[in-house]
Length: 102
Image 1 (cartoon, rainbow, N blue to C red):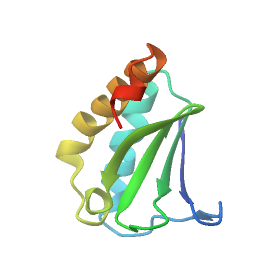
Image 2 (spheres, rainbow, N blue to C red):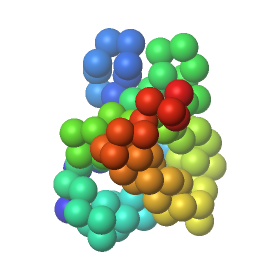
Image 3 (cartoon, helix red, strand yellow):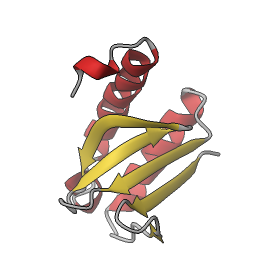
């Protein structure tokens, strides 16, 4: 099962995504991570905009973020697509195209 964490960029401390509607989204992310061979997914809360959660897949922190409303509003029907976009950002970065994504 994939380890999913939420961290603050400002202080590096972990926080819990406890919103009741987040449970289904987290379940879908775990299933997505397992199907895509990621044992760890981390969402980093932006220091300047608390609604941005920057995605980390495995050891790769990406130039891709998901809005916190995905969790607080339980948008499970879109999270798989968002995670696929994150995986695409990871592949672009690995291929050397990340510098063009800024």
